[in-house]
Image (cartoon, rainbow, N blue to C red):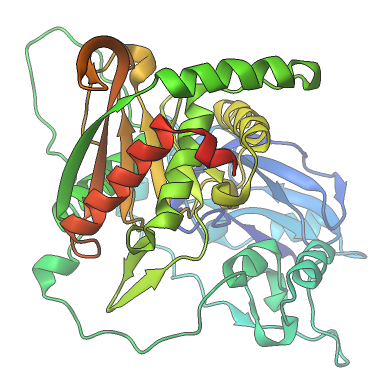
Length: 434
């Protein structure tokens, strides 16, 4: 019986993806851990690995196919000792016509109009309980075992989503850090549960080019709509003198030159935001159903512009890291973000965000909160302004910073105290090094 390879859910928000490239062909032998394909998710291009050994009997979804639903069968693997040709011939009819779009046709040339009239495929079965290999040993891929051992996860308590109930990498990632199940809250009104409607299509006689939305742009549109519709934002702005921070940055960079480290202003602002969140922990929180999550460390998501959208790689534990470590990590994360090579755990999560548009000369802006986080700091450009210093009017380098706070979780007074702490740390940056 051939093993069905299904479109995996490579991130919690992924509902469909693009099969960007096959790295194997029909007839190739594969082993557990081999990379089979590159899949474009809603945030990045990720590698899809094999969990079983065998021979690629049939590829059912061609590379370049987009809108492939999670759970769609994309290929068949003949097990050891099984005839690959027979396995390919035994492929179920539903699997041979993938639920996906590629140009104007689906599957092996069936017109899209005819495919639309075909009955929908049966729903994918729920993940089976973790399978056993005949003894007391739970059935899991080698990679899943290594990840489970490293993170202290008991495999016997997991359900496997791989072939035959095998536990795979995605099951370990889903289990890592997952809180115990809670009773489901009372059903919300239908109007509150409904997903935001997609913008209505319209005709125009203005000369234009119609460009299909990427998976990333669709996700950005959906999440920003949800954030503005469901989170009551409160905005607090302070003006901050940057001269002391710029002076310290120059001195630190001279000392770090031999180590190949060059601090940016943004690196120092990441540290300042993390430190201010620890100083005012009432702002380092998230709303989770009927609970308030109070975080014990500051994981700062940093907005990075990439082709096609925006992504937020995370500096984990920025409050306890040296500025040089933040600078190195941010450079490495930003580089891989622009290449589309970040892993889900590197951009999903975080306790607060920082978005800096100062390099574009933007003086001030209000950023949209990145749920489920409780706040985001928007940084404007540092510029020479008339500024009162020691009771006299002088010229100083000043920037405006605006904090957006989730008013359900954070009171205005607490947000104001955090902005005050952020201003004090930036204007007296030696405190960040203590």
